[in-house]
Length: 397
Image (cartoon, rainbow, N blue to C red; front, side, top):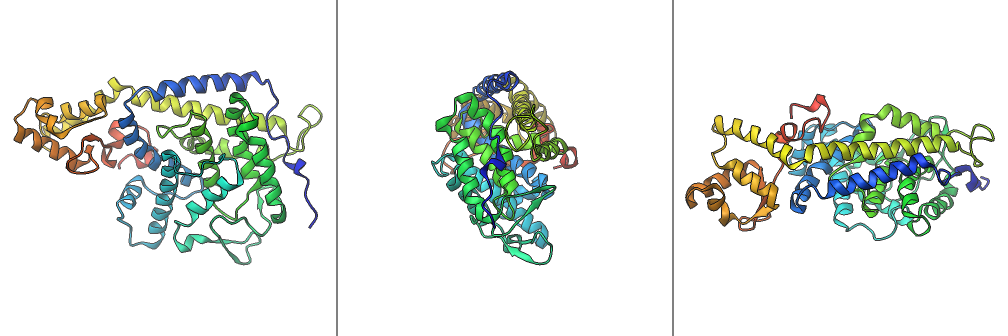
């Protein structure tokens, strides 16, 4: 096959000086900084575990792979369904969470997230954790099944809607151009933030793998935002994309289209549509930060927790003094077990009983029976403490 021109993917960025995109960047940076300072870092770590599960739920839902939050929670505890399809979806969810956990912990490759090395690592790390039945996909012509090799580029042609992705022998060249265009070394901070939206579309346009491109792209976007100091384990753009999935898919498809005349940039693809997608992507980031900020206001969070604990105490499922211990975990991040008596005002034995019940319920957790305890977020409290985190269809967790 003939060598395809890299110009087919141009423009790689919206035009410089777009005031609307720049204003969105300013808003995004300011709000992300405020969110980062709202809670103790230890509380943020615990919330990060919850948000990773949420991110996985929404990212997979975009691909029409639905796994109930409770089934994800069970899978993380290695409690898998005996029903094959549900079990496979649980394993897929755990794969996504484990890869994002490495990104959040800083143990993913130190190279730029837009590099081929990082993109291949994402695909390999995700796919090698999948069950074998998920490593076979139908060929584009529907005549055979193709094995999905973790971290390996596709070897056949694919079409996505009206878009015909680059020929397989040209993928390395397109990925090299992708890395060059979005490398942090050549862009200003503002341009790097705008580039997260542009790169999101252009990687999907390249479609480097037979399957898993959507998950890999959203994980790459998460890593790019995290490296820029904007993303964090506290929020997920995938939730915004999934809750506006029709617009997400429509705008992605629009950005696949050729330019519309001389007033639509100078590249092969529509500059106007790329700007529109970048605007949408940045707005989704801001929307999700606003949403999490509304939930994580300490006074409001403690108010919701207080109502829940009061009901549990009235039902005799928790003991008096429980709220005082949870409140201390919110304010201090963690506390030594020996402080339970001082915090509750109870004697040592009674205080230990209150603390033990909270740990058994998962409302407080610790890395070992002797280490300090910190806030926990068991799945059954999610809708009470974090309303609308998941869709209404999953409200009865």
